[in-house]
Length: 610
Image 1 (cartoon, one colour):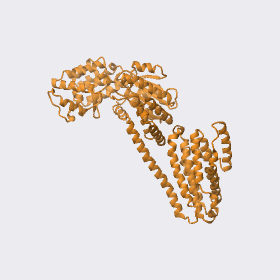
Image 2: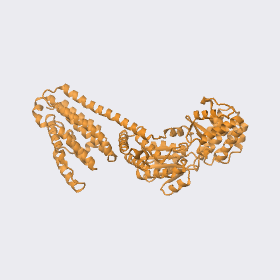
Image 3: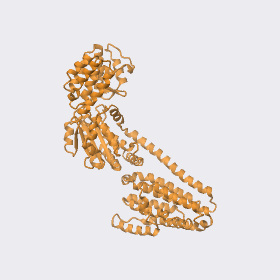
């Protein structure tokens, strides 16, 4: 019999290997292989019910009697007519014990597993009734592998779900997904029962194997389509702002050889370490223009290497509609979108959970800050380790700053494995709140002098190499620029504004005159730029004044096309700007206090507007 059934033996062994390979828990076989008979399951069920009666109350396990009896018949038929090894049959019994133990964590999950077992038990055939058919028709035996795979499909779906760390947090939302996949298994069992007849042939068996795979593929395609539809509906309703463009802009504009000290900072290193549970809150602080945003962008990238969820927000005075709830919405969607290479199954479960919350509490999720924060914390607890970086908190309005900071600190408190970094100036309201927390302070302007010197050296070398100045002029300019880093006193922005300003001078003499008497403060540097604009020809001076007025007074970021059109419409203008925006060089018109990002024009820093 062993020889005649060699193809069946191989099929059972292959099914076993495929099942184990599909499991997230690599130690699964070791956990189930010691249960080899229905007697052991009956003994376990009796002990289990006795234990339940003393704790959560006895649950009705009589429901699974039919399931156990049909599996007993299936295992005996397989053992008699195929002569498989005990380790193959162990996968019929061991997972039952393991599933009941794992599902016992909550009443809902335990009842769901028991009810599912009962349904499958009702669908399985009475295999003993087909003993004569198995003896007479070898081809009917081939159907046994299909039933074996059906049972393993059920075990695999349930065990994979209950093996993930977060399953208890998402069970009510996510179990219906897995239950619908188990419905495919139930349908397969019903279809495979029709193969237990005298007329079955190899074609029928082959078609059944193929149909099983097609059904699962069809289920996956249908579910994924619906999941995308649900997510798109949710995203449209919330319309979250993501900060990827800001992150990219900071990283693209980062000067080489700068920011290296932050990589060596001990407080930052401990904060980034997922195994360090003490250093959970960092305050990256410093004077305006010290480079906090650029350093924050570096920290985002450093955090991504720690294999944790990394969420971030780069806030700015230019974002007129920023509030605590809009930031939380952004963090929620960053979390469920995830980064490339992150656990897709986890992200899918969180999207299902989020859509379930949205479906039951649309208005609260949209407009209730406390509800949105609690939702984010629930999702963060599903993920485990996470890093949140919030930059530019001080650029929010005074009415939004303190409430937003309190919400962010509450997230760090309620999501136990989440670490938070706040980057801001030491404004009084922020300092008062932070003084009541346990945090590590990292002062930027005390440590970035070397970085400013690198910035000045690299920028000036590139600028002068592209100029037509003679060697003597270049040398003189470089000597004068050597004093700039010390004069900056930790303020990157000061060095950048001075560098941009001198690069707009037309000859070496003017440049050297500018550098011989460096501005004392950032405000003095701005004043020099505005004085130069005041000395322009009347028509250009008026145009520059009006452009700065539009940029400063606009409550939202202004498009370069909008600015050009506004200037063109002014009836008192002495010259008419063409509406071709390519001819409008706004930096040349207004000086280095403005910059263009994409299609938008704005001040280089909020201190210009202040």
